[in-house]
Image (cartoon, rainbow, N blue to C red; front, side, top):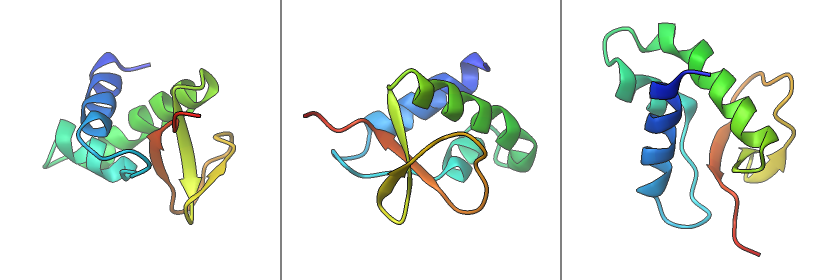
Length: 82
């Protein structure tokens, strides 16, 4: 996993309110505003890894989904406190 992508993702998530989500594009653009599309594969890998660890959730239409085989539009958020 990319350390920069992980740090950027977690930093952005720490700035949003509980249960709010961010787009993977937000993370990629924070890493490189000009070449953000090149960063998306690294961001996606970090998202899958952190979701497997149970540190974040991948959501689609506000509902958690499995991180494997991510396609289309999705967002990520910190795992809500139980």
